[in-house]
Image 1 (cartoon, rainbow, N blue to C red):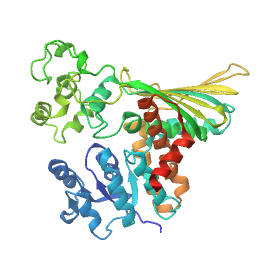
Image 2 (image 1 turned 90 degrees about the vertical axis):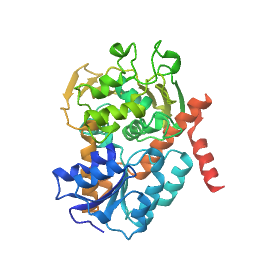
Image 3 (image 1 turned 45 degrees about the horizontal axis):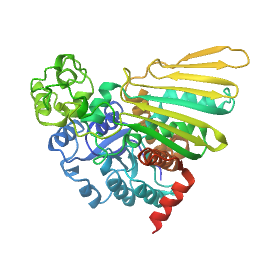
Length: 427
């Protein structure tokens, strides 16, 4: 059934990502209206509900309360922590809501297969995962170039995810994704984005996966001599340390990192968060355990290969890639917003400036909300839902297989891996 504008949405999880997607309603109130929220944190709940003028009866501390009521919106945005994605998604689906779910879908492959089996072949309910890279002008243009056959047939792809050293220290050493026991391995939490676009580019099935990596730098053995547990407690190297919490969170730099550690951006609130919370802990003394660098090699059908590298020790936050085809090669950098194509027959080089797009993820955060709304108002899920649920499942399974390969030091036969998972679900 087609939905009328504005699309009415309940946000499950009023943290940073919840605000990123909900913010679209402020600039386009005729298209999107936030009518409910569920958030366990009292301060986040208060700020969010006031910001979006949500009726008192639609403000919840527990998302289970949302789904105990009759359906009172068109859709839900689920932006809870990774470990709390699966249950609210399942509840929302069974209640009949259309769903925009922050990645990852869930943090274990068995739940992923179970959910996939439940929702497949349902053409009436939109279940979209926030693989926002597909919705950017940058990666969308690369996909169109590939499909035009200007490069010929793809033989090999080299793709780098340059996380940025400060971003890595914030999110994967001190932050929500620092410990896989509480969230997800980095190859899932961060890189299912990249596996999604790489499989989208090629349109081919995975045959085998290997992966290597470790937590090398952000460990206790690299703690500076005399460094206290917290940066605020008189660290002797604080002034020279690039990971000083004082520099990152209390300086004049108004970065997005600050909005994550506290929703109230006064100096007092920020200082309290650093004094008491994980973001004030020395990066060499946190309880982080996710890899700070990882290499994954993927063999696709037709012997196309992908070499993927993620690294937390880079000066820039970007994605860089090189695609080698039978007719031409393509180089691209999100940092430069540039795509370069070299034609083999003439050696002619064509450079394309994509142009700067405001917002996170190169404009993908805004575009995915737009696409979600268009799909619901036109009923054309295939055109606007560029990432099918089945595609999202496959990118996640690639990440799970890569982590298994890394931990077990083996090459994963992907078909066998899927067969074993399905057998485990059935048993």
